[in-house]
Amino acid sequence: MTTEIKEAASTAAEKAGDVVEAAKARAGEGAGGAVGAARSRARDEVGRRSTQAGERAIGTAGDIRSVGDELRRQGKEAPARMADRAADQTERLGAYLRDADPDTLLGDVEEFGRRRPWAIAAAGLAIGIVAARTLKASSSRRYSRVAGGRGGDEVSRPAGAGVPDAARPSGLGGR
Image (cartoon, rainbow, N blue to C red; front, side, top):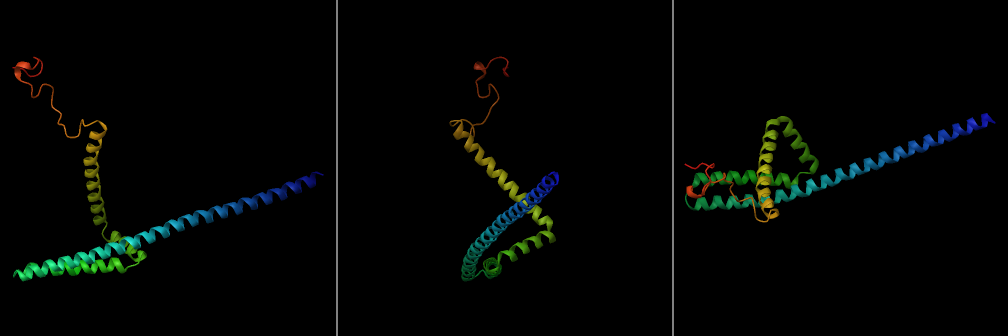
């Protein structure tokens, strides 16, 4: 009887182990599927936004070219040539952004970051400064709304500042 119980327990343990392994495999597939879906959505978004940016850059290149034509009509040949070069470069960038697939774009950004890490650090610093200034500017407006119009635009003054000497208490800088 004890042998039968041991065999049943062993069989049950093996089946439980199989169930656990199957559950692990399904969970791994589910997590892998979620990561794959997120990666696919990110690729699609990069592709869509880069195409939009490319189209805008090509439109801007046309505008710059028009400025060059106007400068040429005014007899300003050197600035017109500079505008034409800027338009050519902008148009090339726009065509690249519009036509490149997301994997190529991301690979090129990674390669650029490896070749010029200082440029990535400088861009991060610039983005951080802009974000800090934006948050600082918006926080004073939010505070003045919450405080019912107090704060934000008011300047704090030391006690007694702006009060005539005769009205100022003796301990606050009176003469």
